[in-house]
Length: 421
Image (cartoon, rainbow, N blue to C red):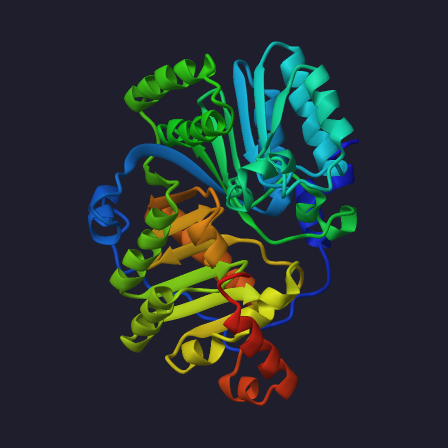
């Protein structure tokens, strides 16, 4: 299957669906509150909790959707010399899955150590024969908590591997919300054109992402492999190498990611921009957003108008009135499914990863987020957010209050069950 057939050419971005729905009063850009010359270490002291350490000297590139992410990921796999580590929630056996499977198998056949960890629940529709064929060609591919482990209890199966990490040779890594599936390919090329973000990382933070992969692999299979020692040596060389300017913190504790959100929002001076695929916040996050808006900070949320889990949209709307009355602005993405899990505060603090602002991510799933301190990357993410808002419809409080009674009833019922959704 050629790459063009799964819609990963750059030109395909112009053919990804209907014309955008212009929003009302899209938030404008503002002057930065920090000088571009302020160091990431100083910004970290202000926006990060004390226990979060920052790795300096990284080079980062923001990739939008599968259109930009898939070619970069495939190029890294095809250029691998020593090892490839891929951890993903969904590895679907469609056109995109076949393309990645072929790239991984070719790497294994030329002597690269290829290890793939996919979540058994997220990939339950995939063909078993596909993974068996990869194993026959030398790819060490394994499911995380397959259904055969039901004997260990239901709670054991509730903890899923929701991370999306690709790390190659200790030199480059990718982190974000994009899985291996045609959902993220353009609509005109057979995909569903889901909206998402991926961060390509080079530098010392690559080791930290690899370390998360190794920890999950060892936890699931009690397996220790040689490439981990190589990764450790790569980290020492990467730390000495003159890298980029982006400071990154790699967070894999669910509580630490949640705490990073709360801390940054509480320190916001100008803007809090959050894109959330699934948004069922806890009380502390709602309070932090309301408090920020009430003290004059621009707080804007980019949420789904339609989702792959439709009931979650109604549960999310149960929070709208409380947020809107405090001055929070809400924009609903209209064109397709929004799957991004990103945020940017004051144009300098930002996060990209797999963590959703809802209960499953907070209590059960294995997650990973990269938190960066960089005015340049923050500006890019903020411009991307504001551009997305132009394809949205802003929620008006008065119109929202006049919604049909059955919608209000549905929202109340789902809100009551928000802790189990």
